[in-house]
Length: 305
Image 1: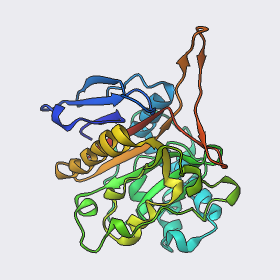
Image 2: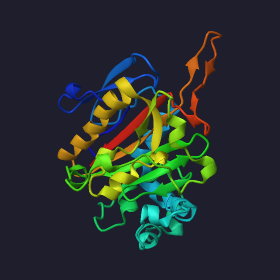
Image 3: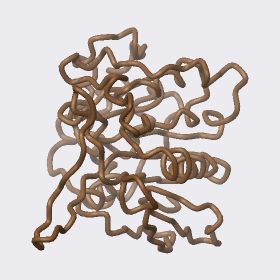
Image 4: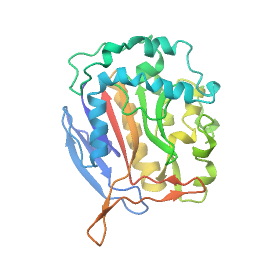
C-alpha cells in the first residue's frame, strides 16, 4: 500500500512528489464552496470531516480481517436482491466468498493492522476482489457486476460504494457508450425504499454518481449499472458534481497508471453545523415524494497497492 487518503475534491495541479495535496469543499450546497488544503504523506493523514469519516478510513485501512465478517454481507445482497438478472452474479460466488471463511476466523476478531495480506487472486469472484480489504459495514449490501454498494433505505442513497480500479477497467473502450445509459430505478430495492427520477426533477440537484461511470468501461453492462438510482446521491451540479467532483473521479482513474490496484470507497456524510443558539444541529434537505436525502458532505477514500 502506498497511501490512503480521504477526499471529496482533488486539484490535480497540487500534486507534489511523494505527497498529495487535496482540496475539499466544505458543504454540498449552492453557491461558492469553501475550500481547505492539506498535504498527505505516504502514511495516512485524516481530515476533520467528523467521526464518520474517521471511522470509514480506519475500517478501510485496517479492514483485511473484516473480510471474515464481510462474508455475512453476501447474505444481504444474495437473498435481498429481487432481480438476479440485474446483477448477473457468478454461480460460484458462494465458494469464492464464503468458502474462504471459517468459524475460527471470527474468533478473537481484532481491529489491529494486519501483518500480512494474501495477494489478490485474479481468478477470484469479482466481489472478493473489490472487497479485498473488508466491508466498511454490513447493512443492506448488494454486489453489482463491477462494484459493491451498501444502500441506505431511510435516506434513499448509498451509505457507501466500493470499487476496484485497474488500468484495463478504466481504459477507453469503443464498445462502451455512456450516452446509451439512462438513469433508472433499482428493482433490487423494494419500491417503498427506492429513489425515482421524479425525486430529482426540478430540484436543482444533479444525480451524482458514487461509483463513477468512467470507472467501469470493461463492458456496456458494467457502465449501465452505474446509472442505477441506488448509486446516486443529490449533488450540486455547477462547481461540484460537474467540476471538482469530476476532477476527483478522474484523479482516481489516473492512479491506475502508477499502481496495479486502486481501491475506492465513496459515500455521503451528514455533518453538524453550529447555529445562532450556539448548539450543533444536523440538518439536510430532502427531495421529492420519496424524501431523498441531500448530504451535507461527501467523502472518497482511495487505497493504492
